[in-house]
Image (cartoon, rainbow, N blue to C red; front, side):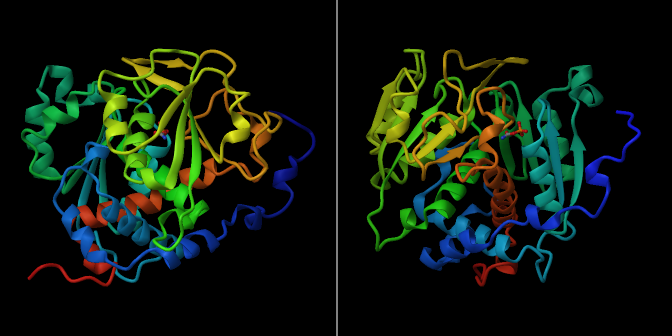
Length: 359
Ligand code: CP
């Protein structure tokens, strides 16, 4: 944009103070979490493909390590020094790829990155099994995003290093769900305190059968069913769950209600999680109906809003400067959760937390 006047943002130094994020939330979380870092040793050399792989106590230790890193991100020893991560993103991404790569760099490792399958042997018809064999030779861990939900499962047949599912079609996005839960617990640490019976009611504006973030989040929430009054799924559609999906979540203790209108239910909700995009092949569908949120929507004064982003019209910018906005914190915290997870998976957790590996 040409102008004869200097843009206001260029007239002085960047307003760093307004970008600083308070550390009171990770500190508060640390105070309530038990110190059992040995639980993280169970993540070493494991793939992370589904939220179903996690247990409650492991998550709490992962969040404890993430909070420690968030408070002191400049680590004394770089635990992944000399290790190589391969990131393969065959679908667009801002947050997931960059926060995984930022996490690995901050841990001292190096990265090989593929953002276009046409630049690999896939363009010549090479199988994912063979590509996985090569990944095992060149890297120490792999992060994969693919529109085809089967790809990650094909790769684990031959991979000899851990793979992290960064979104497979409409199936799952487990590390996004970890970031979501970490944010929830930083907002309300009492939810993971043994000495407190706090509970919350969570609204999810989305479709559990078509949105991978929602599918993975519901699985993780079911591990904390006793701290959740109810999950209210808000969607105009009546076709919300895959066969057996709701039954599985309810069998794990989660109480679920479906609502088809947003306005009536908003005053009941402590947390509103909104995600309007469902990937369908190479394109995506957005939520239909009056499902948008703005500062005037009638949220409870103390309610928080989460969104995995990228946002569309459903999340109005009028919320950005309100106390409801926890979605930017959610995106920022994802790096610390991924640092904690990667360190654990590559068997280097003892270099960050005070824990000895088995002799
Ligand atoms: N939350 C999330 O998956 O964002 P990206 O699509 O930008 O990675």
